[in-house]
Amino acid sequence: MDVLKILRERYTTKLYDSGYRLQVEEINQIKEILRLAPSSINSQPWAFEIIEDDVIKERLSEHSMNNSERVRAASHVIVFHVYRSVEVFERERIGRLAEGAQGFYRGYVASRGEVAVRAWMERQVYIALGVLLAALPVLGVDSTPMEGIDLEAYDGILGHEKYRPIVAVALGRRDPKDENQPSITPKSRRTDVFL
Image (cartoon, rainbow, N blue to C red):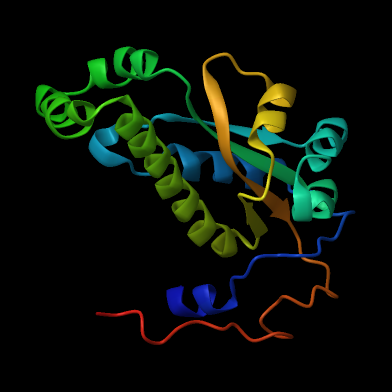
């Protein structure tokens, strides 16, 4: 596997083949990728919702800003959620960790207050997002990470008591006419990123 080749060819899909649907085996692999994603002290403050239902995707698309058509046309949408309650997170996740991990959490995360804990939990979710975005091209799955969504509306539609959405990813197969693909529009990346 040529990782650099994969990353050079990976891009944010702007136009999906609306007739294409991911297979069950592909979804199962994606679930396992997310399950295996790393997090600080193995905190795993997340839940992932994989949506295929066209009615729900249509409702979400209405609150997806510039990503509306992508949500409609994509095979699936994954919504990344984080715990709503720090107290519940601590009871369900931190309380089950080894004492050293709990000590790190208490001393370096929780000691900075609830706002800092919430930000830390969200950053863990973004680690899982990065792992997924790097893995999808290996499976031949195209994707669109989406922060351009109305999180309150998504939350109202999906309605999970324990978790709230923070980011989503559309999945599917690119339409050959998608002008964002690197074979049509070459990637533009900074060369001065290393200090």
